[in-house]
Image 1 (cartoon, helix red, strand yellow):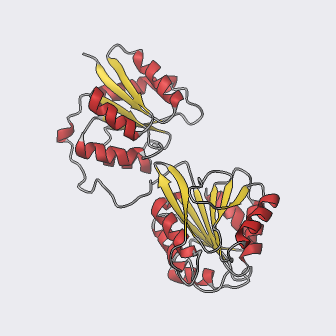
Image 2: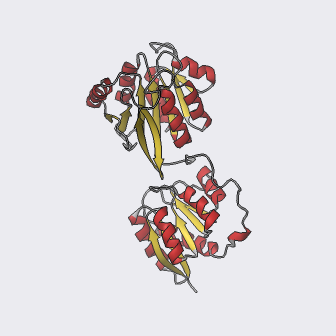
Image 3: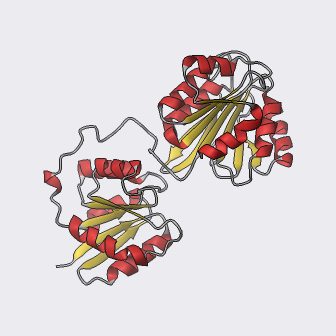
Amino acid sequence: MSIKVLIVDDSAIVRKIFSAELARDPEIEVVGTAPDPYIARDKIVSLKPDVLTLDIEMPRMDGLTFLRRLMKYYPVPTVVVSSLTQQGGAMALEAIAAGAVDVICKPGSSYTVGDMSVELIEKIKAASHVDLAKRTQNSDTETSRLYLTKTTNKVVAIGASTGGTQALQSILSALPANSPGILIVQHMPEHFTRSFAERLNETCAMEVKEASDGDSVITGRALIAPGNFHLMLARSGANYFVRVARGPLVNRHRPSVEVLFKSVAKFAGANAVGVILTGMGADGAEGILEMRQNGAFTIAQDEASSVVFGMPKEAIKLGGIDRVESLEKIPSEILNHL
C-alpha cells in the first residue's frame, strides 16, 4: 500500500519538482499539492494524506503556525522542507518542537532537488511509521510570540527626531539598492513627509516613499511614516507589510518611534535591526529595548555625531542598545549584521 503524500509549498516550481521526484518511488503516491496552509487544510480533510511535506515561509500563514494548529486538531506526520532549516539551526529545532517528525533543508543555490530526493524519500517513509499519539506535545503549542525565529525577509526600523533628516539622508544614501526593507519614523509635520521621501528617492539607490496602509516591506524599499500617522509593522504568513493609522499621541508624538519599534519587536523579532538616531526626548527608548529583548540587533547614534543626544541617550540608559556608533559607521553596521 503506497504512502499518500501532500506537498505544501508556495512555489509552483518546488511543488512540480517534488511531485516528479517523489513519483519515481513506487511506494509513494503524491495525492495533491497546496500553495498555502488554508488550501492545505481543506486538502488534508478531503485527501487524508499519510505524510505532509511543509515549507515554512508561505503567504497568509507561516508553516510553523500551521504545524502547531495541525498537531493540535488534526495530527499528520510532517516533514518540514525549507531553506531556513539548516541542520541543528534554531528553525530546525523550532520545527521539531512544533511537531515536525523531521526537517530537511532545501538547496541554497537552486530549486533543483535531485541531490536531496533520496533523503526526502527516506524521511517520508520514516514519517509514515510514526505514531503521533505517542509523541509528547509541548502544552504551549500556540505561542503568544508572533514572529518567526528566522526568516529570509529582514526589517530595519529607524527612529529619529531633531537633526534626523540629515542623518537619514546620510544613512540611506550609503545603503545599496538591495538593502533589506526599511521602516522610518521621523518626527515631522503632516504634508512634509511626502516631499522628504521624494527628495530621498531622487538621491538614494533604494526606493524611498511615504508609506501607505498595506504597503509591502520588501528588499530595496524604504517606507517613511506619514506626518500625523503612526507606522506599524504587520505580518501575513512570512510576508511583512505596514499599517498606517491615526491613533492617539504616544510620547507626545504621532508618528511615534515607540509605536514602530514595538510593532517590529512583536512581528519581526530577531529578523530586525533597530536604529535610534539624534533627537530630543525619549521616544523609542522602551520600544528599542523590547526589540533587543526579542532578539533584534540594536544601534544608537553616538553623542559626537548627534545634533541632540536625547533619544539615543535614553535608549542606552535603559539597556536597549547593542552598539553605539557614529553616523558614518551606522550603514555598514546594519549591513554587516544582516
